[in-house]
Image (cartoon, rainbow, N blue to C red; front, side, top):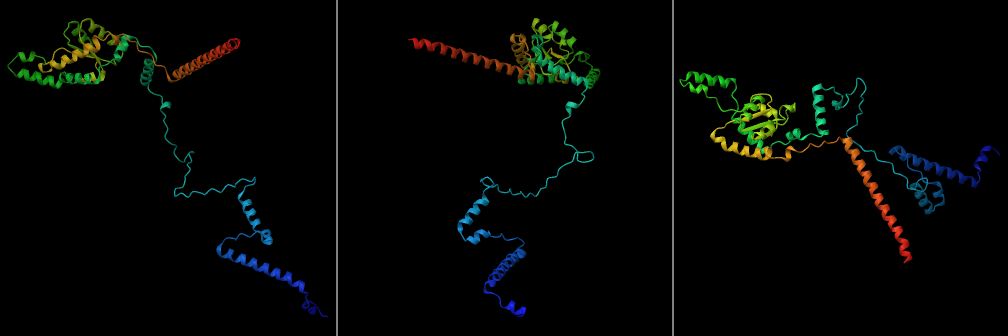
Length: 332
């Protein structure tokens, strides 16, 4: 028999594998067709579950997919946040981005007078100040100081232009006594004021609180109290200097005022006597030193430790008393 006849007479059992292969090929082609069109592969079904045809296998497989390796729930991947603004990292090396601004005041070599000012301020805070110097920290209140400077402004000394104009006017006039009359003004200069106080001509003495060196005026309050001249300590020497056309002034004195300002002067004199001349406690108090930050923290830590030890001792004493009282109660 020829070979063609042998191939034509195929057994019926051989048709089943051929049909199965054709069906498998068709399924693969159907799965590949949507993948090409949509651009994503379709997930293949589990072969074992399809072969068995049981629903229990599908449920177990889904649970197994959700759980992690140790039976826990698998972590879901985090969603990336979409932002319109992109982060630009800066490069601070040479020739690139400028570094941010920093406070370089600690690295500055300050002038000597500034260092002395700061050291002096810290020293005044740390050390105990004697009463003779500490009395200059007790200054007049804001309302009294405003009333005082309002009065002093009316009696400012005349400057060169005003003095020249006054003398020219007096020279032109026929009245020779007008030239000899000087206007009523505030007196300044520490030697001049001392002479006025000793002559008891000064009606009110105003002293600056920040005179440096303080020895220039430290004796002036005692002299005013001894001769019963009202005095007042105010802020500051620069403000007093503006009254008399100077940069600074240590002290000023009022010897006389016009009639319309007599009541204002009397009010200021009574305030000066109450707050300064007759205020004994203000001139006998010491200025207490204030510790630095590190010293204050160390002191607080030590006090806390001492208090904790004291509480421990009290607690131990109570416990010992309770233990000692227990046998006595048992004997009874």
